[in-house]
Length: 227
Image 1 (cartoon, rainbow, N blue to C red):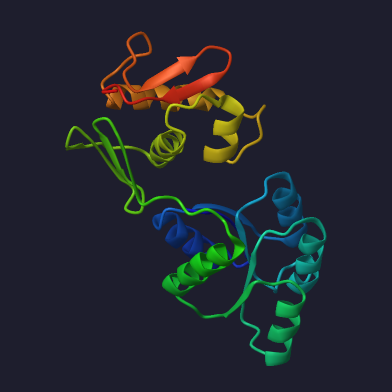
Image 2: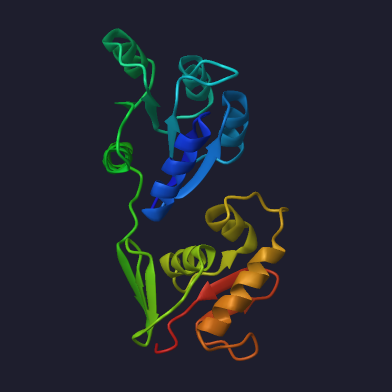
């Protein structure tokens, strides 16, 4: 799973790509214009950017230069422009890959994985086991003692993030940044709501926690109750 920022002004294409990538387990933020995207990428850097060139406020080639001036995040150009000289120019200007429309979601997924491997970005394990909890991260499924857990997307993402930091206290600000892609100071009450729902599905309460332990004033951690 990767944090992706998709910069695409065509609403149907943007929605279709976002749906396809989220369905493959990625966290996807989107922007419809370049300058808004630049501000958001600087404020909350993604792991990879997918960039259309035909934007309404600034040419994507110019936006690539702006991004490269402030960030080394991998950039995949995804555009209808198929001129070979333009492709070579943009790859030399800092793009990490170049896709010509139309392309399939599977092809984009393969390019994303290749770019992330080359950039050295750590890949998540495909599965995690914590006590009676089993997470299939690639398939986005979870079971508790063999029974399927009906988790929302954010509940699943939160559980995966805590499992990746098993036994470690993670702060609320880290949870907001990594799970909700928000800076601390946003609506952090949503954490409490999702933790409450998650506890109920795990068969525990805040007063009698088994897996989810709150450290008052610091954050929370996931533990294996069998250890």
